[in-house]
Image (cartoon, rainbow, N blue to C red; front, top):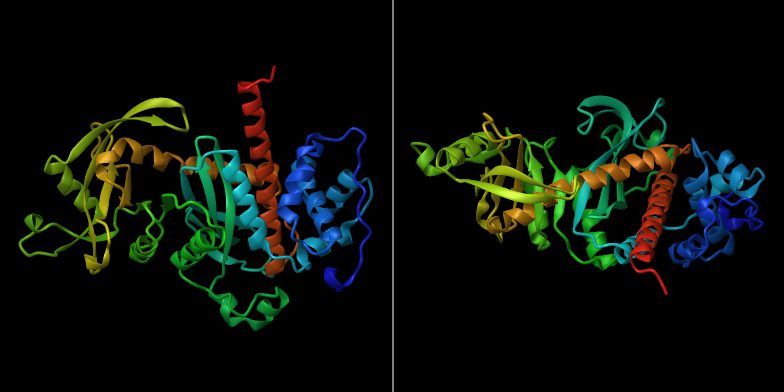
Length: 403
């Protein structure tokens, strides 16, 4: 099939009579900033067409439906070529999206979340029967990690990594059909996370923020924590109760006795290391009261390289027999009233990803290629980002009316 870079496409004329909400005057300017460095005018125009379709087309967002409802005519091949084959780079678009989101609302953390793309076949890039931790079951799917900017106003995923299963390392036929780059291989999850964060820090120059992650599916959180510490990042990482740790000396006859995070929390609770915290829940907008167990934690690795002490933070319900959640953090324990609401911000990222599936076509990609997948999730993030930017602008206009 011919690459979009080698052909000239007529610029699409978008429908204006009865234009839907996505046709508001702000969308062209928003898209100009996102796609402004595309070398071809038709690429910039198709970018806006696709984002407009993700915003406004009801139901499934297919190339046929997008072209018919946005342009008033069928332009399936052109849209498919733009998404699947056109050689524009996703990372710069994501970087500009992140900067627009940062200008629109105050982000308080970066949330890293697993995203599941259920599939029927086995040819789409990265598909395999694999365990999806967020769904607690094995699914035939693609698995991805999304890094979102989250704050009181909500969340927007701005960076993406597709996790390649081991079978995709071995099958050159699959890799060739999906145009998987040579350097893309199956890696540990922490490697994908740190790569995405490096891009956000070094290439996009975003302000460093605490990192939130659910790491209960991983037996050893140490590689992720070390990587975050090496980058000077604060973190609040949820861990499994059976995460291996070293128990305090006073807990055992010999120093360095092996135990679990659950045992460490129980030890801390027995020694009176509990704190009652009143905090503002950013999700419910209510004040809440909880009891937390805190204490230093050493994983079963050399702790000497950690630049800041690691702490266990366990949410222990009043009267409960065990904690309902365990976090590892390097944030100061004296600021518990600020740390606890950070954990709740992950719900905004999860809610944003849910909206992308339901409203902005995140799971509607019909192609199979590595490049096409990255293009589609980037454009779906751009659609949600525009919705967020517009919403924040409307709220500012209501709170500061002119005249």
